[in-house]
Image (tube, rainbow, N blue to C red):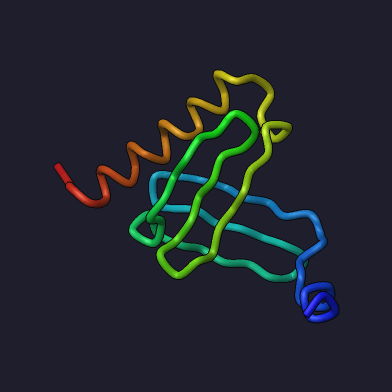
Length: 90
């Protein structure tokens, strides 16, 4: 199992971008885009932000990705707002 994880694990730098339409991610040559209805969990902890889908895919975004704690909170608030708008359009 550890060898499989080593071979399948993504060790390259990952880029995660969020917008009102959803999130997009890029790691090496692999790119993916997902709408906000794909996201089932957004959780802010003292050390990271967790964004997870119902299918088990997840992003753990460490605090070092944010310049300030306010920026981290704004990031989470934006995601929650966009998910809410996606689920309950005005």
